[in-house]
Image (tube, rainbow, N blue to C red; front, top):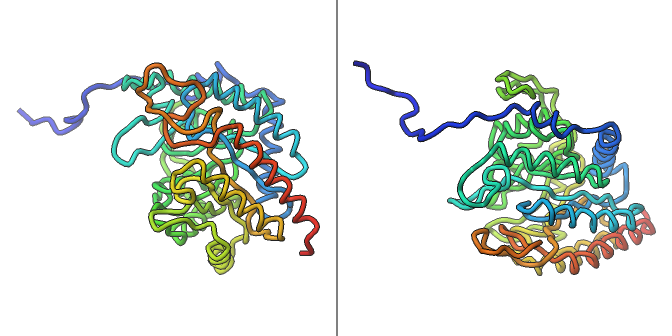
Length: 353
C-alpha cells in the first residue's frame, strides 16, 4: 500500500467563495467607478509631479470594526473637502496584517477576532465596507498582502501598497505589475531602499503569473507593467529615514534608475519608533520642508483612528474606535496635522521652482 504524501499537515478545508459572488452582492456602481477612476488619475499626477497637491493617506492601522471605520470615513470626508485645493486625502482601509510571529491577521482572515478564521465572512465584510466608503466619497488605500485576495476588492481601491515584509517577494512585484491603481513600495524592514527601488523597476515590466480570475478559476495572467509605482520611506530597524538627507539620498537613487524624483513618507512605523504621538512631530518636520519648497515629498501617510493608542484585540469589551494593532494618532490630534500639511502646500506654491 502506497504511503500518503499529500496534505499531511492540513487539518481542515473550507470552500472559498468566488470573487464574483461578493461583487454581485456589493457591486461598484457607475458613480463610484467614476470617483475611483478620477482618484487613481489624480494620485498618478501627484506622484509624477504634474499635480502640486500633496497625497495624504490616513486612517486606521487596520480595520476591525466596520461601523467605527464608517464614522472615521465621515470625519475624513469633511477634512478632505475642506483642504481639497491642497491635499488629496485617501483613507487607509487595511484588512490584512503581516505578523512577525503570530497574532491577529486582520478582518479578512479572522473577522470575529477569536481564531475562528471565517474568511468568507471577512471577505464579505471587507467588500461591503469598501463599497460604503466609496459611496461616502472617500478614495481607498490598502495593502495587498495575500496575492489572491485582491481579486475580491481591487476594483474599489485607488492606491495600493506592497509592505516592508513583502517588498522583496517576486510574486508581489508581479501582482503590482498588473494592479489597476498606483502602488507604493515600502523600504524593507531593515531600512534598505535599494530593495524597494528594485521592486518598483520590476513592477514596471510585464510579467506572467498564476492567480485567480474574478470567477474564482485558476489562471495564468499576463500583465502590462505598472508605471504608477513609487517609493514609500517608512524607516526601519536601523532608525527613521525621513530626514532631508535620507530623502535626498532616496531621490538620487530614484533618479539614477530613471524613476520620477517623488516619494511618499510614512510618518508611522520606523519613522515614529511605533510611538503614535511622534507622528505629529514627523509630519511637522515634513510640513516645514514642504513649505520651504521641497517637491520630492509628494505624499505622506499617517496612522489615525477615532481614539489614540491601541488595545489588545482579545480585550472584552473592546473600546470603540481604538486600534487593535499598532498605535494610532487620535482623530482629534490628526486634524491639526492635516491642516498643517495643507498650509505647507499653500506656502510651497509661493516658492520659485
